[in-house]
Image (cartoon, rainbow, N blue to C red; front, top):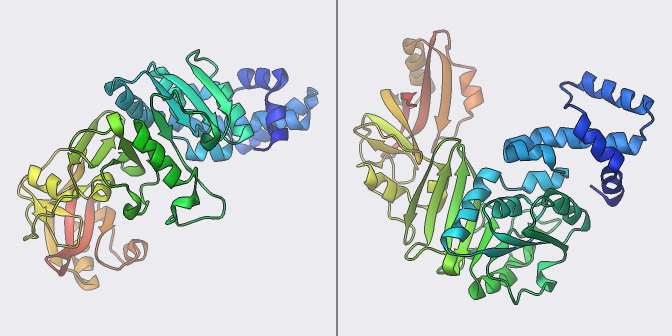
Length: 392
């Protein structure tokens, strides 16, 4: 979004239309709305701004729920904004540490600050991009405990800050982030601030682990099975004796596993009655071994993230599959396995075997009424096809 688009949006005319128009349900509906608004005398800039916001609000509902109906967005800002369900957990971390205020140094459209303020924290929100800062100011206007400033974090006076929250942006033109200078603010500068004050730093979950400062807690967070971020915690926000953690969230539950360091894997063993697939956050945090020991499981292979156990395991930290049958992996064996099982709906999962699941699916006799999961992996070094049932 550029300045002219923002100016068209932040008018009483556009904001009034936003409050009065229902969300369109189809492309034809969009076209008819645009035509009707133009006939009513609204400018093309105003109509474009309003219809664009309605489209973004529809997408934002997944992240912000009912709050989306009262917020303004840019496409880029919405894409990188934290989910409110995740930000609320971050806010809880500050409260548990006994903190009452935080500087959100790089607030974007205000998603994290919204959660912080909603939890009762006083927030000073900084944003380097002028247009994005204006959107944040609008989104955070309902909270009298929040101030928004158009300012770069590096140039702001942080002398009186009680705690810091950073969401460093990737510099334009960079793809794979291996250099601390590839972020804005640079990671070196952010890490120095984190050594001085209690700090949370939101980063991409696939960030090079070599860049994680020694002694900080690195927490990988997943939501509904997708790993969304890695957060580094320092000072009073870091929990004693913990440098690795995985937080797994769903709509109705949450679970966490923590450790003082990367955990050693359990030895691999023969396939048992159940296959366990750790959540991606647990894998990223390298806490699979600790999770296996908690549930009496072992690895299926020393290089594969699947575990196997003699009894079912019910935990948000993993998905459990009951083994129905296993055969040595080959296209012939897999075809016979699926044909005999009378499977019509098939989920295909793979680890450690180079195959395209979509291509394989097209060769299989999916003619039955049953459903199952086909797990293609290595068991103690041997390529294996496992027919399994996903447990709730």
